[in-house]
Length: 183
Image (tube, rainbow, N blue to C red; front, side, top):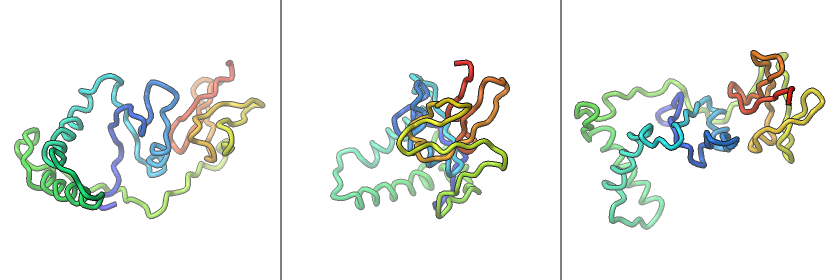
């Protein structure tokens, strides 16, 4: 809330984010971020070097905050994290930044964190389908089509693709499934 929203996150293929390898790309967390207009960029599977700076950050956090410590409560742990975050971002020199702190390169996002999730709306004339809360499927052209199960209860748009037999099933601006009328 304090710093606004990022345009995107570079994420691994772990369970909170969904995986690029299966149809489980969509999770409740990813849907929440899509509601906020935040895009997820998945790192290439089995290439941890893509997220090297994140791994380096985690190592530093473990060494400087977590090593050999126990915390009595979540509150005391959060306090330690908050104190360290100020040092890490505002005072600690970073070799990759020419020994400047990260704040020297940071600008606050212009995308404001809303008080409530915005409604997803589609332009007038868009084909929309409400996914039942009990089944992960929608009806289109007289057939039932599977959609990722985390979209149960949501309204999705059906949009034509560049091929007349293929339609994109979308949540906001994100394609979440495809309908192939030839299959």
